[in-house]
Length: 159
Image 1 (cartoon, rainbow, N blue to C red):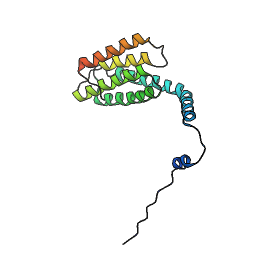
Image 2 (image 1 turned 180 degrees about the vertical axis):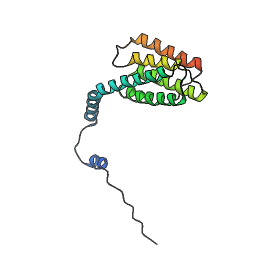
Image 3 (image 1 turned 60 degrees about the vertical axis):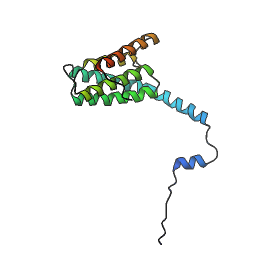
């Protein structure tokens, strides 16, 4: 019978948790919130730059978006969804998720229509943190119209 030795590495986080002292959960959350505020300006600029990149893709593909362009749109949109969720930009998040639904639906159906993509990107620009935000009523109306666009094309939310 052979003896097998199992090695359990010591993880820095595990060590820190097991040590007495540290900070409270409330202080950790406060610090995390402060850190987010410090980087929000950079994130806002990234969102704006990414929306402009999306506009450029659509401008090149107004006669029809290729599968590669649709994949690029989804990649950019994914970045915006992550940032919008992180910084609680609810309307931007919903509009961008709608863009993802439409772009994915176009890819799945083998269609090249740029119009529904362009409409979503224009709405995203309205919801950009660097633009003057529409009122809650206007935001709701815009999001409802985007939902109609997706429904017209028969594209259900991705999940």
